[in-house]
Amino acid sequence: MSEEQKEEKESLNLFLSTQTVIKEALDKLGYSNSVYELLKEPIRMLKVRIPIKMDDGSVKVFTGFRSQHNDAVGPAKGGVRFHPEVSEEEVKALSIWMSLKCGIADLPYGGGKGGIICDPREMSFGELERLSRGYVRAISQIVGPAKDIPAPDVYTNSQIMAWMMDEYSRLREFDSPGFITGKPLVLGGSQGRETATARGVTICVEEAAKAKGIDIQGARVIVQGFGNAGSYLAKFMKEAGALVVGISDAHGALYDPNGLDIDYLLERRDSFGTVTNLFKNIITNKELLEQECDILVPAAISNQITADNAHQIKASIVVEAANGPTTLEATKILTERGVLLVPDILASAGGVTVSYFEWVQNNQGYYWSEEEVAQKLQKVMVDSFKNIYQTSQGHQVDMRLAAYMVGIRKAAEASRFRGWV
Ligand code: NAD
Image 1: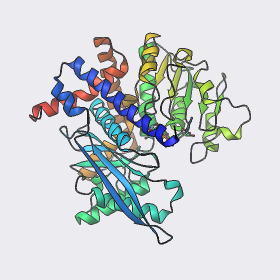
Image 2: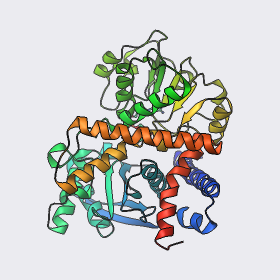
Image 3: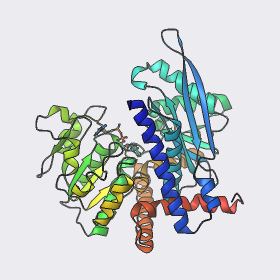
Image 4: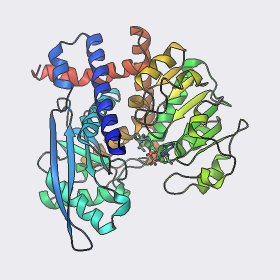
């Protein structure tokens, strides 16, 4: 099987396993099959072709997508990724996940997601700007501050959000900061957006430790991935008094039972989140996951904890900062072994929560301090964790199914009240 076919198969599996858990969650909640029929697929999926003049004078036609899972609760919300492996199935599944995250954090949104098949690492600044603007022109009919609000995702950043916001504002002929989130501060971005995901994960780690009776002071933590999510998380864990004993990146992993020098690693990491290449005594990512620790946080890529290694995980708490790092089979094994698994759709909801704060600030034209943002985020994450933990205990289900139950209920209820099902 070629790499491309493998990616396609993984995206399809991601989509199908998402549908499986949604079905299970709706059944547990007692909804009829018509609710599942509505929510198992996005309500709207736009595929666009975007012709762009490249720097060498040629024209290249890019394929892009925008998926809106459900807009019964409110406008759709979700990032746009620029990546060679973007596929229709992946964008669809990720838009459903956004609905779940928004439901969990109790935000007034449905889920959305977008993507363009491209490799931004091989494109010039000018080509990226033309592609970003072309994408907005192509999807402009279905997006907007009260319809669908994009945000950054894999390989897109605040500069790309700024171009997209400018293009949308030109099309509509008025300044529209609420069209997109993740913007630079000077264009209406929010304080605290950059660290929001890691802050949300940190709050989940703290709440999970309380639930398990583990003192965070001195608790041994392993973080897989040292990018935006993983590196800030390692920093916040250290600040909270935990001992970060392991970290990793795409190159390899570092483990020291006495604790790693996180400040030094943060200083030396490059812009792609790589730092282990500076060391000789590295181990593999696979080995790292099986080392002694109390808390394990996969913050890199999907499918890292599977039926093959779930029995070897030593942590008593696993908090998923990455999207889909644990398979459904591994979730079952970990839960049976008494490991408390905090699922991705809860643990990484901090990013979309601060995106929501950014949109609210744009709509009111009044901006909050970093402390205010942090306080409001703390409340949302603690309430969300408690809600899911209690659902899990009350219904005797694992935390993933509990998170799907909490996440999907809002879209189901709103669709019912609107008379759609
Ligand atoms: P990033 O690109 O900043 O960093 C990724 C890190 O993972 C890097 O350290 C990289 O070296 C490492 N990595 C890449 N391939 C690897 C491999 N095969 N094995 C081990 N490590 C590998 O990405 P990020 O923004 O930190 O996101 C990490 C995960 O968190 C992703 O799954 C992402 O979808 C999820 N997430 C991030 C955010 C956010 O706001 N950053 C929000 C929600 C979910």
